[in-house]
Amino acid sequence: MYSFDIQRPTSVADAVAALATDEALPLGGGQTLIPTLKQRLSAPSVLVSLSGISEIKGVCTGDDGALCIGGGTTHATVANEASAYPGLAALAGNIGDPAVRNRGTIGGSLANNDPSACYPAAALGSGATIVTNTRSIAADDYFQGMFETALNEGEIITEVRFPVPEKSAYMKFEQPASRFALVGVFVAKYADGVRVAVTGASEEGVFRWTEAEAALSSNFSADAVPAAPSGDGMISDLHGSSAYRAHLVAVMTKRAVAAAS
Image (tube, rainbow, N blue to C red):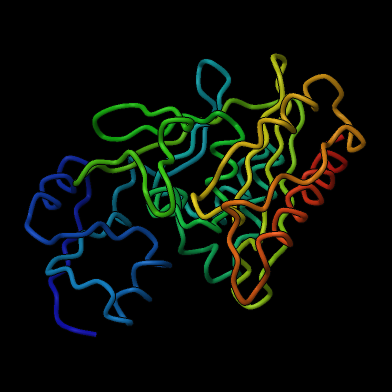
């Protein structure tokens, strides 16, 4: 690695001020950024650690019944304390290994928007709201492509608000070394319809499978899941072809619906 300064603010306001420094980057749990620094793919002059900001940590239920999770909350805390949303708690409990779950944060994952990460599928599949220090962003508007989000420079995720569904489940086909999703599908059934979000499959990052949503909104059963989507635009690499990933989308959706049911 190389030399850099690190700042440890204890409030969101101080963190925002620190990030105004040229070439400063926020540091959440470090599960993505630290390996990036080690590989010299990023070279910030200042790291602004968010780990000391207590106001962006914790899990609670909002006045509207939504599950509210602070952006600095670790995966392990979500797994242990988000019992009001079992599908989300189970997803968090299967991210990486214990070391990753005890350091990585939901805000860091959503800010990075890795195309194979699990939380983007949960946020998009739940119709969540990503709250920052300046505004609230609907999940449908937040994710804008592989590693791309609606966040502006210096904007910090302070909270994620999840409407709690009637039923939900997440199923992923893991890459065994990284435990990232080769394909992962989050299914959530609400009173007004079903949402299906897919991670790990598309070159554009997380997406909603609208054909499956329409079919499952009429008949919430694994038998109602449509045939696999087209492989066009699906990732093709040493782990699996685009056609294989498209096939897994349908398989994982059926498993998620069966688990939710």
